[in-house]
Image (tube, rainbow, N blue to C red; front, side, top):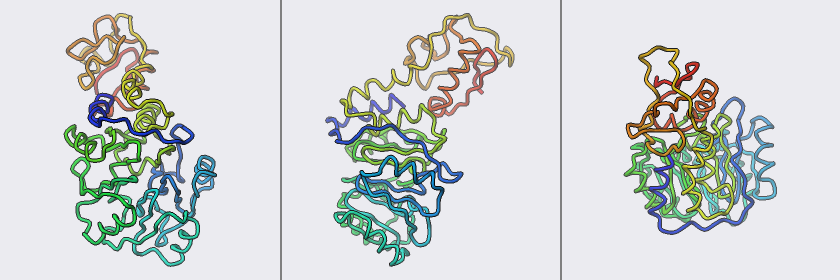
Length: 348
C-alpha cells in the first residue's frame, strides 16, 4: 500500500493545505455488536448524525471527541437508524431520502447549523450514503442516478459531480471515503483507476482495508478533516494507513509523511540473524513470499527473488511478532494468509 500511496500522491503537484484543528488519532468504536460504524454515523466538518436507539457507549465515544466542535445529533430517518448509509453530506449541506418524515426534518433543521442546507433527494436509489461519496468540492456518484437528482446534489452540496465506479462497482459511497485531505478506496482498485481518481479529485488516495481486512470502506470509516472513527476490529497497521492518508496525526508537511510511509510500516519488523529452522509442517512448506513488496524491508534480508535470504529466518518468538504485523495489512494486500508454525513461517 505504501508504494501505491506514493505513486498517486506524487501526481497531485501541490501539498493540500493543512487544516486548523486539534490533531487526533483514529478512534475505535462499535455499535451494539457491529463494527460497521459508518452504517450508523455520518460525520462532516460542521455536524455529526448518529442513529437513535443505540448503545450509550457508542454515543459517548462520539460526544467525548466531538463535543464543542460540531453538533452531535441523534436521529432516525424514515424510521431507520442506519443514518450513515441513507444520507450524504458535507460542510455545506445534507441530503436525506425522500421518505424522511416532516418531524424528522424539523429535528434536523433545529439542530443543524444555519449555514447547512437540508434537502430531500427524490431518487429510487434511496441509500444515498452507498451511492455518493463527497467532500466540500467534489462528489463521486452512482452511474444510475437520474439527472434531476444530480442537480439537487450540485445545488445542496455545492460540488462538482462525477459519475464513477470504484473497483468496477458503482456504489461509490460503500467502497470509498474522501475528506478534504485525502481518501481511501476499495483494496482491489487497479493502479490505473487509482491514478485516475486521484487526478479527478485532486487528492492523495490509497487502496486499503478496515476492520481486519474488510473491503466496505464506507461502512468501516467515519471521517472529517480532523477526526476519524473506525470499527473496533480495525488493526493497528490499518489505523496507521488511515491516519496517514486522512492526515490525522498533525499538520506536518504531507510530502514528508508520504515519504516516511514505508519506513513507518517496517519499524515493527526486527532484524533476523538466526539460521533457518525446520518448519514443523514438513519439508514441503515454502517460506512466505514478499513478491508484492520486493526490496522494501531493510534488515529482513529479502533477496531479488522475493524470499527470505539464507540465515535470516526468524525464531518462534520473532515469528509471532512478525505475524501480528503481517495479519494487519500486508498479507491482505498480497491476498495471502500467514501461518506461524512453531519456529517458521509458511505460505498457506
